[in-house]
Length: 446
Ligand code: HEM
Image (cartoon, rainbow, N blue to C red; front, side):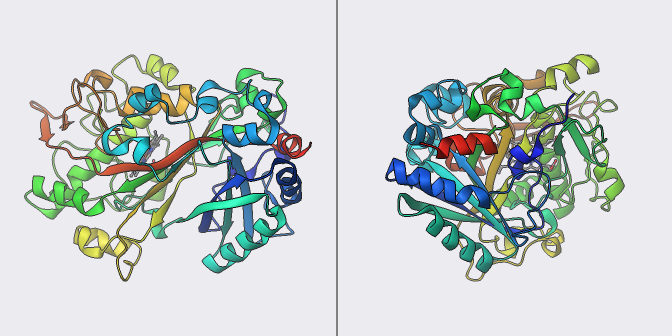
C-alpha cells in the first residue's frame, strides 16, 4: 500500500482531539453563495489537517463538515451527483427512518435540526470554554456575513471518559492504516483506508471524494435517572443492578469486559486488559458477554454464532471511527448507584434537564457501515439467534418484532429481563462530508 497523503485529510480522521476536551459544534447556513465561497477560502488555513497539531494554533483545532444541501448550495447539483445515495438523500427519508428506528419519539419530525436545512458544521476544539468561544467568534468573522450561524451545541470529553450512563467510553478504538508500515499502538484496531475514505472505497475520481469521509451525526439524549432506576428495580442489591447494566452494555462501568453468568462485583480497572483486543472465541454461548449486549451487537467480532472466521469476515468492513462527545449538564449524583458517583463529573448546579451523546461516526460507506450496524445489528430482533429483542442501549424505536426483553445466557436457563425501556431519544442529526484539503479548495473556488 502506498503511503497516504495525510496532509490532505482532516485531522478528525486521525485524532479525537483528546487534549482539547471542550468543543462547540456550530450549524451554519449559506446566505449568499459567492461571498460564502470567499469566506470558506479564508477559513481553510484554519482547518486542522494531517496527523499533527498545527504549530501555529496549538490551543485549538477546527474541522469543517458539509451536508449534501450545503454542497449543492455552494457548488451545484453536479457536486453531489457522484457521492453516495444516503448522503445525497439525507438522514430523514421515510425508508431510512424505518431502518434506523427513527420512529415514534425518535421521528425526524420532532428533531431540533437535521441535515436538510443545515449547510455546514464548524467544530471548534479547545482546552476550555472561553478559548472555544473566542475561536468561534474569530472564525465566524473570517467567514463573513454570507454564513449565518443557525445554532450550536457545546460538547465535551467528560472526566474519566464516562458517558452519561456512567460507562467508560472510547475503549474500542479504530485507526486508519496510512501505509507507513507501523503497527497501531496497543488497543487500536487497524482498518484499511477504504473503510474511511470515500475515494479509496469506491475508486471515485470525484474531487469532493478525494481524501474525504462521511460523518454521521446523531444527537442522542439519555435518560440517566430512568436507566438506573430500571436496573435497580430488577436487582436485589446495588451490586446486582450494576452487574445487570454492565451485561447490557457488555462492559463494566470502568470499561472492563463482563464475564461470568452470576452477579459479581466490578473487577478493578486494568489498563493492560482494557487495551487488549477483545475476542468472543472463549465465549461462544454468550455467558460472559451476552449476544444482545451493546458492544457485542455493535461489533460482533468473531462472536456471531458461526464459525469464528466466517464471523470475522462478515464483520470486516463494518467498522466506524467514533468521535462522539457528551453534551448537556452532568446528571445529579442521586441518579447513579453510589459506587459510580466518585468516578463521574461533578453534577451541575442547578441540574440541567437534558444530556446525552453527540454521536459522530466516520466511515466511507454510510449504508454499509453506520446504517448496517444500526439496522442489522442493534435494531435486529433476530440478531445472532436471538428472536425478539433489540440492543438494550442504542436500538431505535418502532421496530417490528421487537419485544422489551434482554437475555443473559447462563446454564441451564438464561435469565431474561423484561420490560426494557427506551432510555435514549434521537433529537437531531444528519449525514455530512468531511472533505479533504483539495476538495475543500474546490468547494471554495468559483
Ligand atoms: C446513547 C447511546 C449510546 C451509548 C450510551 C453507547 C455506549 C457505548 C459504550 C459504553 C461502549 C463501550 C466503550 C468502548 O468500547 O469504547 C460503546 C461501544 C461501541 N458503540 Fe456505543 N453507545 C451508544 C450508541 C451507539 C450507536 C448509535 C452506535 C452505532 C450505530 C454505537 C456503536 C458502538 C461501537 C461500534 C462500539 C465499539 C464496540 C467494540 O468495538 O467493542 N453506539 N458504546
